Image (cartoon, rainbow, N blue to C red; front, side, top):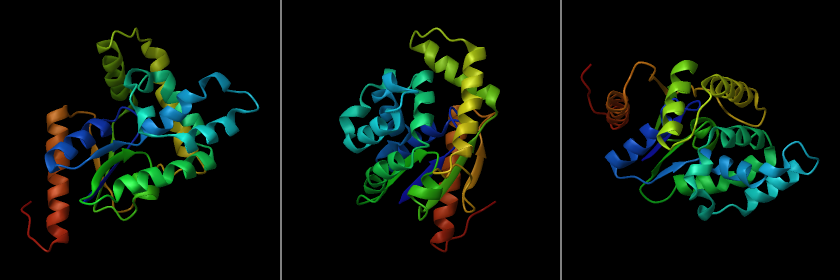
Length: 217
């Protein structure tokens, strides 16, 4: 079973994807970490003539070891870098096989990102698109950072989130939109446990319908 979980930054998609993976006993890949790792690798070259070429080289050289420094990878600044490298077609192409190979391993997997249901796994068994309003997402990300001892400028963080949303949605090489067959889950007013229960219910219902079973409303 392949489960694709898409949505904007801090919508809760990563937490939900991890919870779904644990619930169904599937491996999980946060594909955003791939772009963050590439962005982090070329951070010193932002706005220089060689930035694009360096990002492409970093993407082609990426392996699992580059995903281990979660503190650096999950910072707000690295998120901005990720959106800058994600608009480079050759970067996306270099990372495509990494993601597809993970998704199609025996037994399936759960992947979360921005284009899983539209580009990476259009054939996923279940697709979810997670959303929440910008203010709620800013506050969630701020609390995550503060829990790690990072001082947060909420005003700047809010604008970073909105700028990244705009960049991702306008990305000509991306697929950041709700797939026609994706289930929308708004987490603005939901806690983690309630959101996970809702996501599990969507997966169970979808798989039951595909198997020809009956579900209660």
